[in-house]
Structures are given as C-alpha cells and as structure tokens.
Image 1: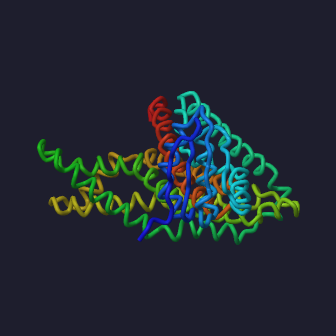
Image 2 (image 1 turned 135 degrees about the vertical axis):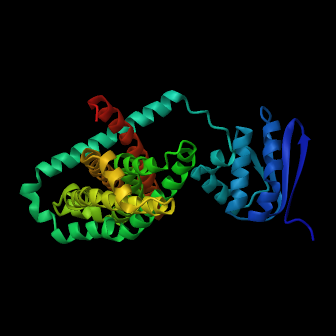
Length: 368
C-alpha cells in the first residue's frame, strides 16, 4: 500500500522547493516531519517554496507541519498550489504558535542562581503563609462564626483516628526491626540487654515523631491539598471571599489545629507499638519483661518523651500548613489538583526532616 504522504525536495533557480503530496493528516505529517525539518534547516538563507499542488487532503496536523517547517527555515515560505482551506488552517497554526514548540529547540541550562532564587522565593512564600495563619488566629475571636466545631472534629478524625491502625502497624514493625538489627552488633560484645535502651531512646527522641510526621504528610497533607485544591478549581474559594468569609479562618485554621492536636497522640501510640515490638524480640532472646521495663525506664527519662511530643506538635503544624497552602495555590484544571497533592507530600516530608535537624542542633546546644 502506498504511503499516505510523500515529500520531494529539489532546487529550482536558487530556491529550495519542498513538494508535498498525498494526505497531510496526523499519520502523513508524522512520516514527513523529520525530513521536512532537515530540509528547512538546510535551506536557511535561501528562499523556500512549499509546493502543495499534490496534496489531496490536509488537516490541522498537516498545517502544524507546514508552520513548523516555516519556523525551522526561520523565514516565511512561499506557498504554491495551496487551496483556501490549507491557507486558512496554516494561518490558524501560525497564530497558535505551535511551530516554536514543534521545533524542539534546546532550552538553556538553569543556573544555580536561578535555583537558589526560586528556593528563597518559595521559603519566603511559606513564611508569609504562616504569617497569614498567625494573623487569622489573632482575628479568630471576632470571626468565630466562620469556624464550625464539626469541621474540626471531622479533620481530627481524618488525620488521627483513621491513621491509628497504620501507626500501630508501622510502630510495631519498626521496633521489631530496630531490635533485630541492633542485636547483631550488640551480640559481639555481650550487650544484647542494651538493645532495649537503644530502641526506646531512638523511638522517643527521633523516630517516633519523624515516622508519625511521614504518615501525616502522606495521608493528611495530601488530602488537605486535594480538598482545598478542588474547591479552588471549582471557584468555591472565590465564592467564600465574595461572601465575606476568610478562607484562612474557615479552611486552614481548623485543619492546622486538628493536626497539632493529633500528632502527639499518634507519636505516643507509635512509640508504644515500637516498644511492644522491641519487647517481643527481647523476649525471644530470653529476657523477662521486668528487666526490659527497668532498662526502658532507667534510660528513657520523661524529658525525652516530652521532647519528642513537642517536636511532633510542631511537625503537625508545619505539615498541615504546607498541605493547605498547596491547596490554596492550585492552578487551573484537574491535573493541578494532583500536582498540589504531590507538592504537599514532598514539601511536608522535606520540611519535617529540616525541622528535625534544627531541633537536633537546638537541643544539643541546650544540653538535652
């Protein structure tokens, strides 16, 4: 079967003639695309003619091919044998600006200054959002009618109660794995008993708040971003502003308050589940529960637990704020909702790790 389209290239009187024939539809344009671009590049600096006498049919894909060929030539081409329909479609393709995108030019590399500037702008925008949240909190007594208790309890149930099974499972497995992995080097020195100390300190000070924050970012921050993002796409947020309601007070503050409330509880449950997992392993090594309990109580003072719970509350505040901000900055279209949800998860996890490093330096300077 003959090809749906063909291209003949020849020079006539110092002009490059590109003679198209056949059907310039999606399949035909795809067959001729590379040859047409190469011929147009070679013809730069010389007049070029697009001979369309043999074209049987042309749709928008064919017109895009012709416009891209002109763009690759870097100069308007002379049309020969074009019908009124082809001329009209080519005009639409030119005005749509499809040719520059089709030429696939290589973009210039982004410099480190641009990356640093974008990071600074993003950080400044995040601090500005936290400032707006603080201002909305100060104005809350005068805007109590905008906050509904049912919304707060719904968000707390979504972020906390429904996450309990996952938190318990992850905490138990983490304690189990830490105990097994720690016992391998400890056994070389006959110090398997101190596995309980290592696991309890690691969970209460670092891993408990950090793992709970990752769960909150994956489950709740993405849900916050998707909910508010969908409202933004459907122009419901604009409707609230039109009615004189503050989105920060009505949409953001209840979610942030719920996250701050449930994060210490989730962290405490994760710590307990992790200690149970560690105790299961230690029992397998032959240690009794009273000995394990004594080791945990002696080497894990209440200050370590309080320190971890305070970190968890801050993590919850930041993760909820990032999720809500991602939702409020959602663009247009359903695809932007998914982008906002992804940005909320990634931003929440990165912010949690950075904050954990800041807390580590801060507590180390205080000698805690």
